[in-house]
Every structure is written in structure tokens, then in C-alpha cells.
Image (cartoon, rainbow, N blue to C red; front, side, top):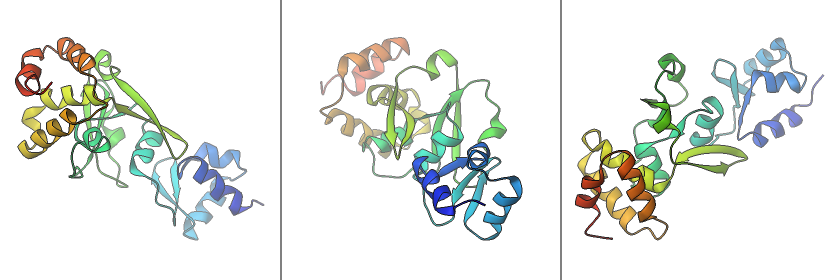
Length: 198
């Protein structure tokens, strides 16, 4: 027999999301997990992953738990840094170029994966602890370079709002921005959009 309070505490310790193996570690077998689902105590959010029925984990935490290799990217990163107000229609994540696209098809939340060469996908990652879970997000300077690199995929209002947000951000690091711009061969575009302001 298991104590559901212990299960609930474990969910909260892991940002509201547990893997089947973590439930097994608590002494729950497959039948007991199904029983908790039938009683509307937990729900399956993806094969092998569950959340509490009455708990709403932060979506960036869900992404970090389901896809630990993914990095929050582009508009989703810009929103995290409060450079834009508009919530993107889907969580934009950067994943390694050869990742299986089916892995990111989930019903629990909308995810749009961008497949990026590994040496660029691992560049400029900051890690934030949110609800006890390590969440990977591109740093603010790399996020602005991504914005400029993907200008044709971003709404023009979002583009200009994000640039203004970055320019006014006391935490920006222009040397870091220029370094990323040189790596991605977009120094001219950085000078065009930001050079006047810094």
C-alpha cells in the first residue's frame, strides 16, 4: 500500500511531472498507476510521464522534464526575458538536428521544434531552476541573435518590440552579442538593428 500524500509531494518536488520509473521508485506498479488515473488523481501527459490532476505545472518545467535535451528558443526565450508581451502559439524549442520529430508531438501542450546543428544548438545556454527543475533557455544575447537570424519567421511587431526590450535591458552584454553575431556571420545585421543604440 502507498500513501498518496507522499506521491503528491514527490510530484511537487519534480515540478509537477513524474516519469513512470519515478512512480515505480515510490512503490507503485502499473496497475496502481492506472488506478490513480481512473480515480482522476493523476493524468498521463506523454508516454511514460504523468502529472497531478489538480496541479498545473509551469509549461517550461513540463518541457524540461519531457525533453531534457531541448533549449527554450526564439519567441519563447524572448517572452521569458520579458522582451515581448505576446505569448507564442507554441513553445519554441531548439533540439539537435537529427532528433526524432515524432518525439515532440504531444497533446498536453503545443511544441514547435527547431532542428539545429549540435555545435550551434549547445551554444549560449543558461540554466534556470524553476520549481526544483533545471530549465535550459538561451541567454538573452544569443536570443537576440536568434531573433535576427530568424527575422523572416517572426512577426514584425514582435521583432521590433523584442529589439527595444533588449536595448533597454541593463543585463544585456554587447560583447557577448557581438561574439555570437560573428559566430553566426550576422555582424552587419547586428550593426544595422542595434549598433545605433549601443
